[in-house]
Length: 266
Length: 339
Image (spheres, helix red, strand yellow):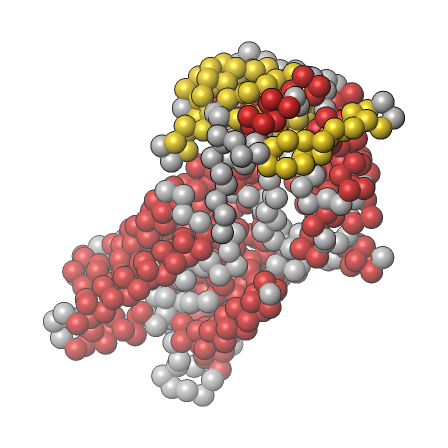
């Protein structure tokens, strides 16, 4: 599925969050959505998922609006993983991941062999198969995130939109999760993830969209997006760069006394 | 390994439903057999089925059976709507009684009582109850639509509860004579005594409609476990769900309260007893909580007749005496889990 936004604007509480954003999410690419806190990353992701109405402009899914596509077709086409997703009841992992199959089930249809197979694949891919019998509330933050990721993967939708999927993970699972998302894109899915770790974003993503000041400050391959100028303008930081095994990496080094409004200090 | 083993050894859902249905029907039979006059259930049943108008057949058809069946219907309505409210608000304390739906239904019924409409039109009482329940449910809905979180909703529900309670007290205060006030007070305590077939037929259609509306939300309630955005992204229309659940709760609870008065805590206790057996899945919980609610209500109604207290204790008093300590234990446990 191809998601296009055209002159998209969004507001929250009377404040403009996004202004005039036009971009296309293609299948087969892993896109990282980066930008400072409050830049509108989650807002954009929710608009791409068809979960919110834009203040102006439009979002289309394979050329059709969300209303034309229909809520159920959209649910089969786009898996959405919310930021630090809540789990309100003490469900077991397996039952939770099975929720990802809801878009495929009829109003009275039971769980089919195809549903079970998809859940098994998702559990294995997210390295969560050994957690299947555990109650979700008893899992560690990282285990819980992988289970929630498995829930999103179980839908087997052509598009996966993930809000900060690696935020709660240890370094080992961060790398595994980024590789997993990249592999999903290699197999033909369109993957968009909100990310804060610039090195991971640079190493694993095919494309980065840097949101800042209500729009896409830069959009393209990581090398072209993560320039000193862009990082100073968006985050107000200077970075240290290096290279390992032919891959570039960068570390946020210090905050710059920039025109950017200072974050409030407690 | 042990966790996986418990997962495998869970009682299968169909067996749970069958077992609870059997228990509810058995309690119905016991309820029909228990009473204050010596009574041969077997003889009465065969007389009734054969159409012989004996005293036993009359007592069974006009008193015992309606009371037992109303216990079943009211209990199922309270358990089911309790589970539906808890799933929808994602709060284990949500219950028609606690969020004000029951007391608003009681207020509606009291207004009808008070105005004398109930004497003129038998349908007026359930309609009044439903109107009250709908009003409370719509207020809750408005709060939800304005983006109130679940805590705010529960607090709003408690506010509705006290408002309805104080308006009911006002009606009592203004009652023309002490007997009218006493009648209302006793009715408010909740009871299944001396209800007849008329009331049974009156509330059956709205209750069935309410049950269907609540049960139709099972899948969406499962999805809501993951929060509203995730449920929406899984293809569920949350506005439609809200309308269905609120209408369903209003129909079922409104008609239940209008027949029995306020029978509290069944809607709170039944989902909690069943939640572990449902694997905590809110969709599965609906039917199980309904059946458990029916069993609890029937058991309590049998208990008030077996106890030596005369006149018999009111059903709502007994459920509250058992339910309120349960609520305290529940809150203590929730606090421990949060800590």
